[in-house]
Amino acid sequence: MKVTFKIMRFDPTKDKEPRFKDYALDVNSEMTVLDALQEIKWYQDATLSYRRSCRSAICGSCAMCINGRNRLACYTSVVSLKTPVVTVSPLPGLPIIKDLIVDQTSFFRKYESVKPYLMPKGELPPKEIVQSPEERKLYDEPCLCILCGACTAGCPISWADPNYLGPAALAKVWRFVGDSRDGERNMRLALINNDEGVWRCHSIFRCTEACPKKIDTGAIVQRLRREVVKEILGFRRH
Image (cartoon, rainbow, N blue to C red; front, top):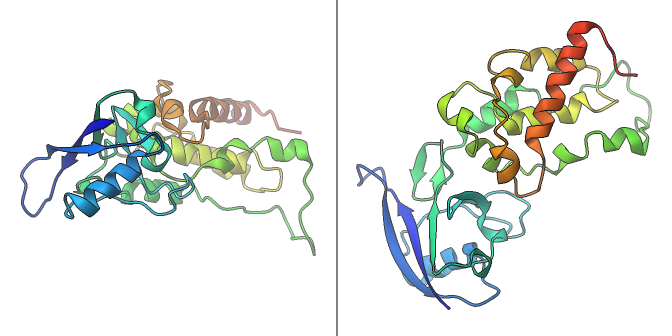
């Protein structure tokens, strides 16, 4: 099958604006978009730049916009796109470093700002902190996050408001708010109870649509809102 890949190119040392360049490629039924990018780089244009690492949908490095949707290039089959023309561009809403590589500094700064680590209650036991399967299930979903940035880059509010925490950081807050072992629930909810936290979300659910791990980040933000309100009204989780 012959496919034309329309790839956005931008070198800030040479270009004033991004542009698209076409590459024709014969693809087979097993080829992913990342495989196609590798073929183009190796045999047609060595200047093409993109991120990739594990090739197993684990590291999140190859997140990019493919035919108008944020996806992992290593997890997207070319044949599944069902089109002879595949358009590839960098994740939207983030500064372009070169070609398909974006600057994720702001994304990780927001992630770090929500204190994404366990802060246990009181003294630590000599061994593990015991947790029931039901307690663990409360925060199963956000544990699947690979920090690819596809959800935040797909959020129109994140494009318009550089201070909005974004769905990835908010999902990480739930990962610890929902964890019975964590002792800083109040602090975490206070961190997001503002106009740049849960109340900035417009419930568009583009984040849920973009997540390659099928995490319902939109629903997680709504869950956090409920917990914030319960905290304000004096309700506590038992």
